[in-house]
Amino acid sequence: DGGITQSPKYLFRKEGQNVTLSCEQNLNHDAMYWYRQDPGQGLRLIYYSQIVNDFQKGDIAEGYSVSREKKESFPLTVTSAQKNPTAFYLCASSTTVDTEAFFGQGTRLTVV
Amino acid sequence: DAKTTQPNSMESNEEEPVHLPCNHSTISGTDYIHWYRQLPSQGPEYVIHGLTSNVNNRMASLAIAEDRKSSTLILHRATLRDAAVYYCILYSGGSNYKLTFGKGTLLTVNP
Picture: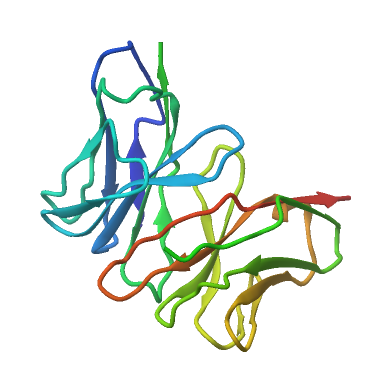
């Protein structure tokens, strides 16, 4: 079945460590997105990519990095520079603005 | 970026219609209006989208004002499973496919 997969569902890391969240889609979508969600809040855009080997900063890119080497994959690295990394992270993909965007089930990152 | 304004929360009774409003006074001609909903601890789910004309699908209807500065998501008969946060989003077109969310409306459905 076509879809978008995030892994792992839960992730625990020690403070000061970099961690990479996986996002894979087999929908042949060009655009992919990463969001952060804090408790009781909406989704805030971290990075997005419209095409392979190209990506743009969203509203809260500081402390995060991404790569887009393959159309299917858009991993997000949470670096030690991110001050408050504990959050729910969501990945999405879409084709154009005239079609729906699909979301993964999210990764809940806890930094201790 | 064009912004949307939604009420923080709304309440409805089961099997009654629900009208969820959204204001987007700075919408541009290339912006599509998308609606998504999110259940706790899950990723958002697509509901409906439109550009200028009203739209219907199996989940809901979308009514778009003639000047496109506001829209309303209509759930014809609310069920308990419709309780969620509903997001109204302007999906920017042109050369920049940027999908930006606001805070959404928390819909509570009473049995």
